[in-house]
Length: 116
Length: 112
Image (cartoon, rainbow over all chains, first blue to last red; front, side, top):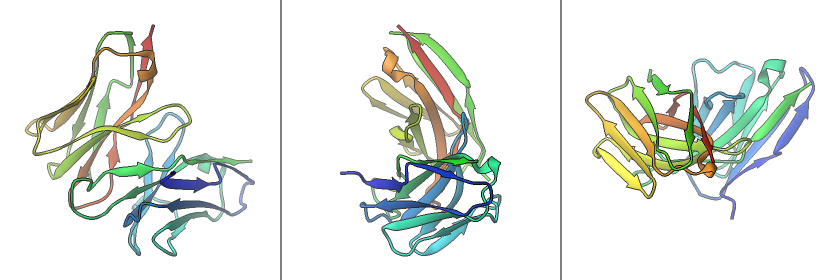
């Protein structure tokens, strides 16, 4: 009964070759996030959606784009991956409504991206 | 924006001892403080959280304390076991927003 699913779990791409990472959720949560986590570092928020409203972090490079076609799915597009983009990419969700579980984030298993 | 500082960056304890990890935050509007445990190659998992209307919360061997005046919160693990070895992240968030600001993490090693 996986709740936040990420595909693929491992992705290898070439320098400059566009890549798309996928996240889906069965929780019916309003908010979906994409984080980048490099080795031995904290997760770094790239952007999040509240429903269809897109919220970009100020320091997220233009190379990173996102799409959320419906409540369940969210995609991370890296237009021209560089060596520095190799990392674990984590998707997370938040119920986004009031109540006991407001603010709690549920993480997916991550996609490890390698750039050759 | 919010700045979350976490100390120490590494912590080594013997099995059965206690471990304490401390975090400070800068945004007085922050009112939600979760702690995540991340094992190597795995997702961060929420282990305990506290809201600003509570000073302390306990769940078996894990407890979190919050001092709003001083803007710091701490994770306490008692009777540590080797399976507690992992990286622990603190975070802070505003009630009105949905972003978590993470500390840099503490690598905890529990030796038998």
